[in-house]
Amino acid sequence: MEIYKDLSSPASQQFEKLLNNQLSKNKIEEGKVIEGKITKITEKYVFLFIQGLKSEPVLDINEMKMIGMQNKIVEGEKISVLLEKIEDKNGDVIVSAQKAKKIKGWYELERAYEENEPINGKITSKCKGGVIVEHLETQSLMFCPGSQVSDKPLKNIDHLIGVEQKFAIIKLDKVRGNACVSRRQIVSSHKKVDKAKIVEKFKVGDIIKDAVVKGYSSFGCFFEVNNEIDVLVHLQEISYSRVNHPDEIFNIGEKHDLKVISIDKEKLQIGCSIKQLLPDPFEHISNYEQGKKYKVKVVKIADYGCFCELEPGLSTLLHSSEISWTKKNISAKKIFKVGDLIDCIITEIDKDKRRVAISHRLTIENPYTTIENKYPVGSDIEGIVSSTNEYAVYVKLGDFDIDGFLHANDLSYSGKPEEELKKYKKGAKIKVKILEINKEDSKIRVGLKQLEKDPFDWFKDKKVNDTITIQVISSDNKGLMVKPEGSELEMLIKKSQIAVSSADARPSRFVGGERIDAAIAELNLDKRRVSLSIKLLEELQNKEAVSKFSSPLSGKNLPFSSLSDRLDDKKKNKE
Image 1 (cartoon, helix red, strand yellow):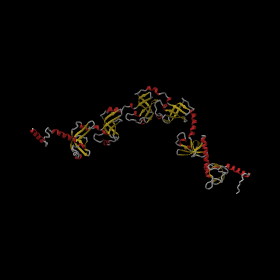
Image 2: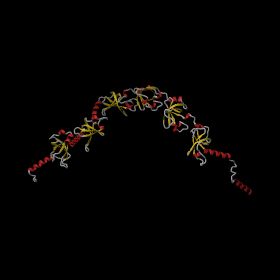
Image 3: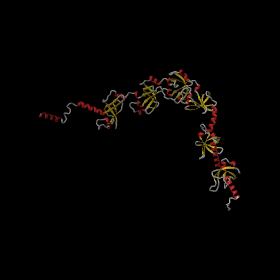
Image 4: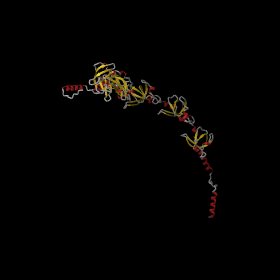
């Protein structure tokens, strides 16, 4: 090989110039997008000529078809590819048309993002949290969050899939190569232009006919006008009467006339009023008197009562507690329906608070007064068990829609309350005695054991320390279970009260059936409490014996008494 050392010759200088020109045209670097010319097409591959490379790179035809470049598979056609490797381990050049297209698409997305331009795309599929959008020009895939699909909640978006539409780029991550887009911004911007034109049609004072109730909020009610714009009626502009929430007055889908009272052209909002279309009903409140009965119309039913009209626009609340005497907080739906005309008495008129209170139960005779007149305290009345719980029985009294309260302790004088309760089932007929009538709290207390003679009356003529005869029923470690003769009461004599001597205070001495005497240790007729003691009886008897049989000479017969006398006599003799 001949080596040219003399570079000053014209031929060498010309060769150097040609070489430099060639290298300056083709700067081959890995990771750059370059153009190649198709030189050969086979069944599976496309061969490219890229100036500056030592060999022709090869592209898979399927790759080109997959990115929509099948129309460019023609000899002589120029296509862009990404040069991944100038030479791999096999000495081949590795290029990719798909990656080149993605990079060019990313450049296009960057430009659109910087210039705030919308891009053309279509929703291809749903995914977790949103949808996948394909950029039509570059086939790049982007993410659109579910909240950015539309300006209002959509239950189904199938009609949007595959449809070409505009999207706004809201976020680009150059490091990860991710793009986030929004359809909502495009829709909202178009609507904003249209909404501004609609708002221009209205002016303060206009009357809007047949606006449709669309939704509620805590501060007012939204109406749809002519299927083109939503307007707000604030809570204070709904009615002259007090309204806690719009659902007390309106139902979705109802139609109402509105009056335009404000227009905000910057926020594109229209404020309306319903009450300003009507005269203030409180100007005629002097026509109504507190304590008088009036016919009212039920206009809406709520969980806590129903709203009624004294006249159009003058509404008032009939609370559930004022519907019935016997049933507290009854559901108004079970008694009334919308449109009913019912009798009510005005219980309060507050002009400052613009509030009228009414009561329906005051128009009906109070059944507690009726039952008090017909069955005063101490009377007997028949009833039916309506329900039971763990401590009481409730009895429906006579023909009245009133339940009397029968406590377990008032079922029997002798039986255990929990066992007595089990005897009474729903629907059973029983006779009870009225013990208390509380009209203010709407309560009646009744008793069953009070129909019988109180066995405790057996002790009315007794007093503490009296001796009575008892019969032993049974015995255990606690003491003796006994019953006074002539009484049905059973009571316990504690082990410590069986005898004075602790050795004799054994319950096992008694087997049952014995007749013995005992003393009354405690007696309280008001609290119906009594306790008996055999020990006390022994103490009383011992005390009585000492006081009865003792004398001033007592003790003279003791062994040392005679010795004492002799000593006294001897002392006297010495003197």
